Length: 140
Image (cartoon, rainbow, N blue to C red):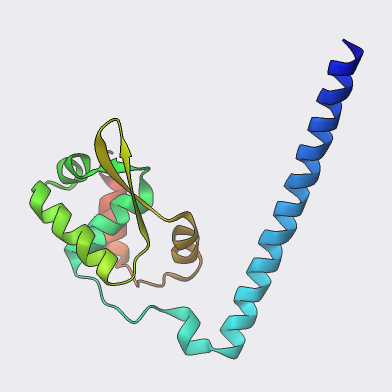
């Protein structure tokens, strides 16, 4: 029992250290992003793409949600499944980092966490605030 308690304490201490290291890495990443903005102000701020209003709606649904199948996105936005598939492909072709995975025999799409963070910090896709509010108000 003492060995188990000792191992548990060591695991907890290791987890605390890993959390501290992760926080420091995140802080360094933010500082590097700031330096990149200073050194390359035009390049680091915006992607060189323009999303249509419908693409922005699909993007915001992925941005606000978890991994979602095309059917759910379509139902959420009132689009057809074919429309959603086309908009997702358009987003991918424009450089938006979207993950695809198979969950319970259904393909689901999700926004890359790093891209989500980049969008949150810099609005690299220049999403129209009205569209963002409109999609956020819909129940997912």
